[in-house]
Image 1 (cartoon, rainbow, N blue to C red):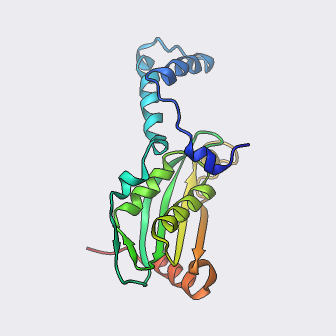
Image 2: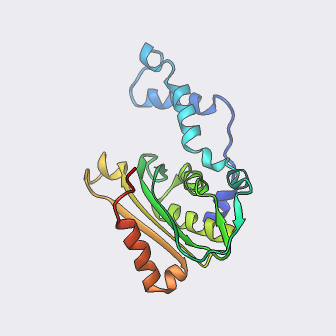
Image 3: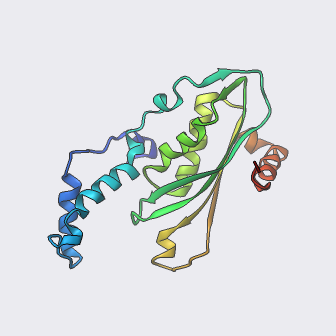
Length: 203
């Protein structure tokens, strides 16, 4: 079995029309007629949608960061919260979606704030499980910044639980990853959790 890190390095094949061709057969196996008017363009639309939803495999981290890491004498917590994300569960290829809250404690390096949501999207736009997605975002920031600590909390709802299986519409899943001082110091974790619980900023 390939490790998670090995899977991340793999690039999916992206030949035009390959997914659409398979989608036509899937429609037939579902009892549909891919030749009827409403479904004529569905295979190619599905291919385009799937390629977008899994575009994180082809996203280059260096191009996302684009040099936006700066030397700054700062050691206070930086937090970007309520980052919306959408992903696909690797078990059923159904969506899960929610919000991410990301914090780090700098070690004389900071990152442009807009880069943090972009990093979340890079990992979310892959076939995922929420637990791994949470850890990947935390480890990526830790590697980029050599931060004193990183914390990531993700809250999500999963269509594989809402539309099928147990069919629970209002249950949510919360995952967290704490690295460095965020894991070692309870008071630092408590500060992060307190900031996440605060109401959103008002303009």
